[in-house]
Image 1 (cartoon, rainbow, N blue to C red):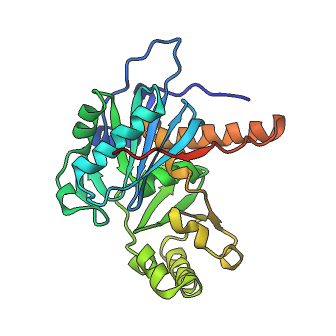
Image 2 (cartoon, rainbow, N blue to C red):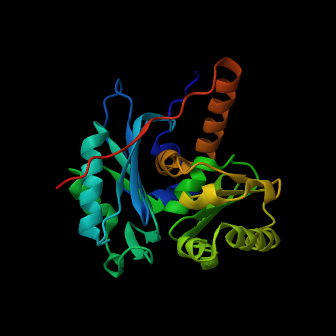
Length: 289
């Protein structure tokens, strides 16, 4: 299977450098003979997931999950991430998908967690928790998008879970701070009105989004993506695995367009030369006392 060596920060374009400088720390110091391993963390309203990925975003080992603490405060969430990190094995750096707006490593809002997250420096706190490992973080919908997009044309990402997130990419480059705010699709609404009516709402939202953004492709991810009636959505809509929210984390250390192109080339080589890889095993991390 063909592999491409990940590019270093010095090769980033100005647009990518802006994302990096706002939401993370410098590259880790790793011996040349040792492959860089990234711990990717996806913080959700009901669960916190993690996985180790290699330099081209391929999973290494299992996908772990722990329930999001009932008290969704920074100390409680950081403690859960620390437990996942200990279970994950050796890694050199960390990528985090966070359900809210983050700038310069500081949380601006987190409506699905706890009010105490506002103005909390996630990058600094998590770096300290994980023994000064380099950390980068972005909105979870942005990370999901990095794991799903082709890097060509206008691509919109909609994440459906406890809340609703969105991200927009043009030729693989993120358009920052996009939020469509479709709360009528949040998880509580799915429970309240049922799957059929919720899908009816989704189709109306899709029609509005296409008129607003004139996208080439819409990707739908998140925990509730499995509830989407695939047979009813337009042909330019793709429902993606929730695993993309982890696999896209490597892009926080890469220039986004380069990452998308590398991932697409890798996928093409896999199709040509080998059978599709089996998905990484998933297990629930053991609960602490």
